Length: 424
Image 1: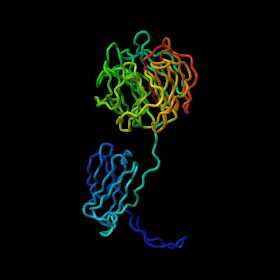
Image 2: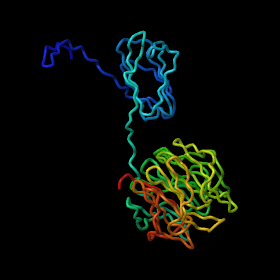
Image 3: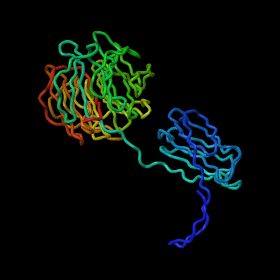
Image 4: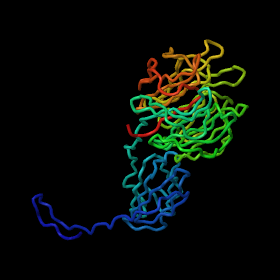
């Protein structure tokens, strides 16, 4: 629009200039390591896999504009680098290094003149980052009830365990399970009489799928946890010999090949997520009745750290789960050197620090499993004491373990559990 504004109630008058035509937004999400930008365009820059070097036009006119937006909030991990291509940027020549490395950032630049060159109109990060809804439900699955089973028991958002659901997939015990893809779950590996590496995906309505051909080394007595908000990791275990290798799981449930192990080889350990996007493996046995309490943290990109000196009573065949939105709890298990079965717990802070023992609540047992439910709570269930049980113990959103709840479903041990579903 252009024209003349006459004197008005605000005593203003003058000429309205022709308005800018606006930006042309590039229809392709930029994922490459380089981009040659064109004036008048807007670009969505996805740096999930790599840094992106952006070359600006070699010539520009006053008022030329370009906008870049952090498409997946990953510039903090992989930055963008601006090459001003012979022109100045904020008054500095193109020998200066210009980088933007804040998650959720957007960069809106306009060309001024030869002296100042390209100037940011704004380069702010979006303070509001949407967060995924918390997991509401859980399920226990598989295990040994005097023989391997594949049945499952769903847990609603109030922590109530349902009766048995007919099993799907190969019956086995000493497997692991975890959430993935934000609202789904996966069971993997285990012992059928011999080690297997097969997996079974669980939909966001709690339906278990048939076997998926295994990837990676077949093993049992391993652990699994979610990381990075939508991915997962299986780790450690035994093939008959202890291992520390891991297998990452993508956001669509695809299991990757073995990653060389980090940390002490062991099995009968537990794992859980913590801190919203990281994970922790802890405890277990290194054989010969030598239990440990050491832990290994997992970054939000799935990298396993070296051993952290253990805290709390060393034990094996325990369970772990997240609670409180960003914290975790290890609980129960077997202490060869002490009282045998235990019900003690160890809380984990949102920075991955494991606390000393908390006096146990509920029946001491081993071979149980645990999962998050109800958005910010957890549940321990099943296992074996003098014999297999199906009782459960709820965990509040402040990490307090409740007394025994009468069991539902087939008594068993050596099972696995995971959270699923955003819907209550």
